[in-house]
Image (cartoon, rainbow, N blue to C red):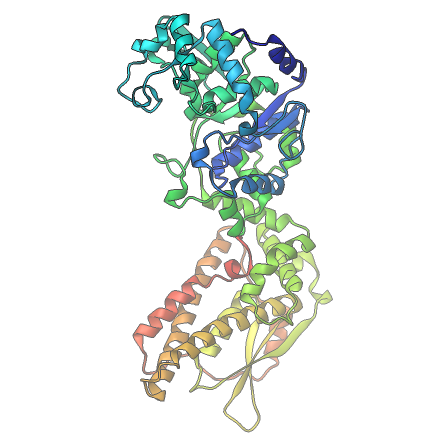
Length: 567
């Protein structure tokens, strides 16, 4: 039966010419992992750098692997990452439809055209012997490869199930060029007669890609290096049709370590996982761009790039053939850099959910806390002291109690905690006796900004310890004295652990010359005060189990991580 030539001519007439056209063609089979995101980013950058067209195509021909909701994940991720597409299922375009299952009527005619050209053939062999996953069937000896036209016609007339296979030459070689890997030549005898069209009428991944890429005018194909082995078959298809071969860009995999690729089943994060952990989209994109690509020339030493800057400097020649190792610590560095550079209002919006996890009092302004946090990190980054930013005489010294009381008996650890927090935030602690009682109220003296942050940090830490102590006291099987001992042991251990954490942070500060010093104006106020003789010492009887629990919690109690997202 002769093929309708106008069918092919009409489709050819729709193909846009003269511009770079790229596509991101994910399969809706699950989450958007880091490798997928990198492919999308590189593909988008190639198009935008050349003022070309970026296409989103959904490849859903593998119906057995489809995951409900995965298409929505693709759309949402692309939107959040600002990787806008010019053509796609939701916006249309001249070469649609853009969902492969909606294009199924296109593939049979093209497969039949290959049969007509002698580059493919009908295969009526049993499924067990002829499917792609069969390792026992010799493709070169496929009995269907040499069927006569009469035999093929008879089988088709009888309704015999079939697949259409690519006819790979037994002799010679096939060479293709890749941007990263250069020219690669393979012997044709090493290639199998891959299935192009399956029994259900749907194309295989490899065949659909070639047909769709041509009909959509794709000039650059970006994909993982695992598809290098399929590239010779792609080239033979392009040659059989008489089509121009696109520019291949095969990217080496993103690795968890030197030996293992990233994998969700091994706990490696997807894009959505990273977002849930507090990483900013811009930081993720910046870091992912450098996973296998390096800028050239004057930008060779630059690490921080906005999306607009990446569009300007991105060059496919900078894509490496070496695998890239995903380093969460490096991503954290990028994230912290972006957090510090944000406008105060934007930072407050991002930080508020994390601040609210730490500060339960709704009356406390989260935006104010965010501003203080951001300012302190900027100072640390640039190795500045407060007086380097604003003269001390323009600032106020605050002396104020914070509403927490203590006694030597009930909560001796409270004074220790106030001393630790105050030193960490360049303040001084003090205790104000409540008239006529043995109760003292905790207070702090410090410059206005330092005081605010010191107060919030102390109240947060105190509430955490107090909350754990309330849990301890629910153990009614113990007498009151023992419960008090357990609580105080936990509080004391917490302070010891927190002290160790602070010492570690201060050591890091000293490495780049930043030493936290209490301002002289604060010291002047303290010098005029009547100092308490109360000594910080552990209780005579200690529950070592609860002290150890407290120590572990104190060590993990990193104020930055509790109050700032991924900084």
